[in-house]
Length: 206
Ligand SMILES: [Zn+2]
Image (tube, rainbow, N blue to C red; front, side):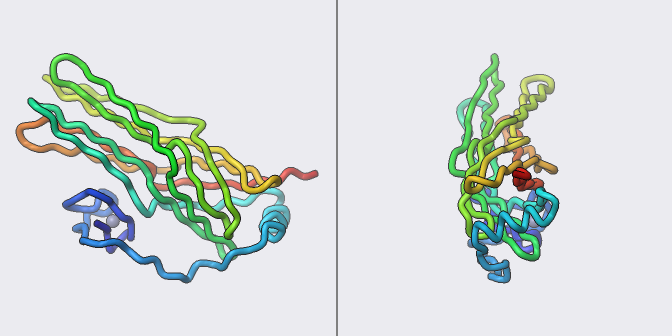
């Protein structure tokens, strides 16, 4: 399922887009190939150096993963994570996909349960050059409401990695998506995922 308005894919979701409340449409989305073509690694390094040793490019999540489970008697468990993030400047395009997702769950007497998921590792390309990022900061939030509701949220706040041997990468979450899902008579669950982030490339002066 995808949203034709914000062009984000929501695998396994139904109803309306949690970003912009447009109805989700069946199928997958093909991206327009108007992104800048790959650049050589040296060209990428030079680009960052020419920008004072630091280059920032905003990323938008273009696919959100989700898992959910309704279990007897009244528990609903669910979690979501950013599955794909993309962005581009005039000269370079970035495409990252979640390659490892962290998962955890908590139960509390009598009917409370959460499931958490967050991006643990991402891999992809920056201007065609391979990069890997690992989560360095994960946030969790829990909300309890009377009598037996529990909502749990988790998302990755910061990731760090490298691209080749000269570029250091830092990806900071700038916006998260959140949604509460309920289904009678079960208790609902909370979903959260990275919606937007700022990727910074750094090249040491040496
Ligand atoms: Zn949307």
